[in-house]
Image (cartoon, rainbow, N blue to C red; front, side, top):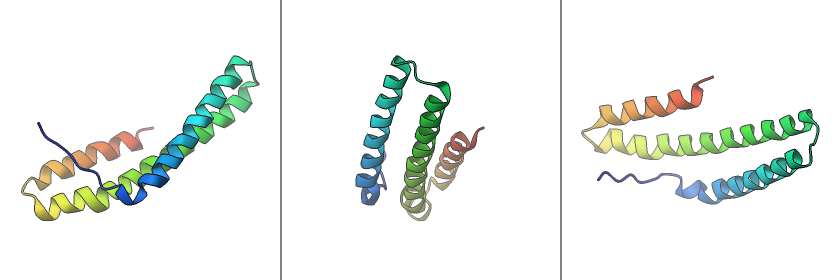
Amino acid sequence: MQTHSHSYTNDKQEILVRLRRMEGQLKGIQKMVEEDKYCVDVLNQLSSIIAATQKVANIVMKDHIQGCVRNALTHNDRSEEHVNELISVVEKFTKK
C-alpha cells in the first residue's frame, strides 16, 4: 500500500480555521433553506462558500507543489508519475 505525506503542516491551523468557518456557513445555508429564505440570499452565501473552498484548495495546492512535488522531483526516480499526478489534480481544479 502506497502512503503519502502532506506538506501543509505550516498552514494546517489556517486550513482548519477556514474549514470550520465554512462548516458554520453551510449550516447557516441549510437553515436559510429550511426557513425558505430568498433565493438570491442563499446564492450569495453559496458563492461565499465556493470562494472559501477555492482559497483552501489554493493553500493546499501551493503547499503540495512547494513540498511534495518539489521533494518528489529532486529525490525520487518516479518524477514523471508525480508530474502526471500534479497535472491531474490541476485539471480537476481548473474545470469549468
